[in-house]
Every structure is written in structure tokens, then in C-alpha cells.
Length: 173
Image (cartoon, rainbow, N blue to C red; front, top):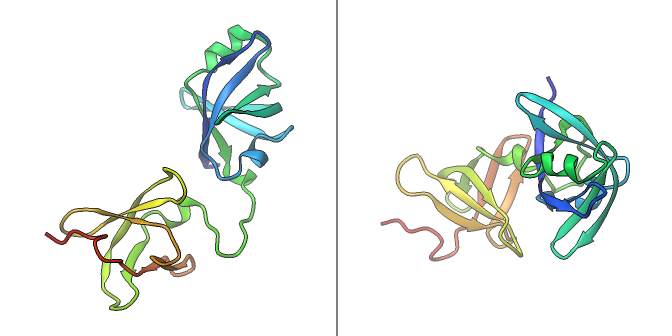
């Protein structure tokens, strides 16, 4: 069975000819929104394919035209829907890069002591760098920035993340 991963959300119609405003939540918006790209929306429990017919940047969003959407009435029907990419359409990433799905729930260890700190429970992308929520077996979750001085190693093959906690990143009270 094909897996699908969210890459954006349709926010509103734009104009009368079927363009929609999209908030892209992917690291690869130019690839995902390139002419001819296949994206999907979910209707009930079915995924419906949409083919990108054109896209352009507009402020912090993208204006996208899909082949299947010809006017404002059809555009309004897809507003609020998430856009997905099929796993089979995902590209191979360069060395040292990874998809969120590949690292979520990985155990996180202190690089110096080897102590297991918890698992990577959530990833947020607020700005310059991602922040990761580490959930220990006991106690409160804490957040770390995904920066070189903190995240030392992401070992996908062994499902292991090693970090160096800077002072103040973890409230142990």
C-alpha cells in the first residue's frame, strides 16, 4: 500500500480561473510544485491525484494551478485540504539529509555519556532551524535546536541520534 506524506495545504482560491493559494510545508517546494508534478488530496479515505499545471511564489505562499481545477467553484471545494506526495514520488536525499518520517521516534543519546535521553517525538520548523522535541521515558519533554553544535550524529541505519546538550536546554527539575 502506498504511503502519503503531507507537503502543504490549500488555503484559498486565487482569481477566477482555478488557481489556489498553497502554504508549502516541504523543504522542496520548487520540486513538489514543478509543472507535471503529482500531488494528492484526501477525500474521505481515498487519495485524489492532482497534476501541477503551473506555480509561482507569492509572498510566503505559492499560487498553484492544477490541471483538474478549472474555475473558482472547483477551487473552493479543495480549500482547507492538505496536499500529499506519494512515497514513490519522493526523491533520494543527499548524504546527511533525511525525511522527518525517518527520524521520528528514534532514540536520542547524550554523545558524551551515552545516556539515553528519550526519543525524538516531534519536529517543528519555526524559522532558521528546526527544533526537536525529546520525550524521555519519565519526566518532562524538552526541545533542542537542530544545529551542528547540538545534533552530533543522525545514524539512520541504526536508528540512533547523538546530541550534545548545551547548558539550559534541559530542565531537570
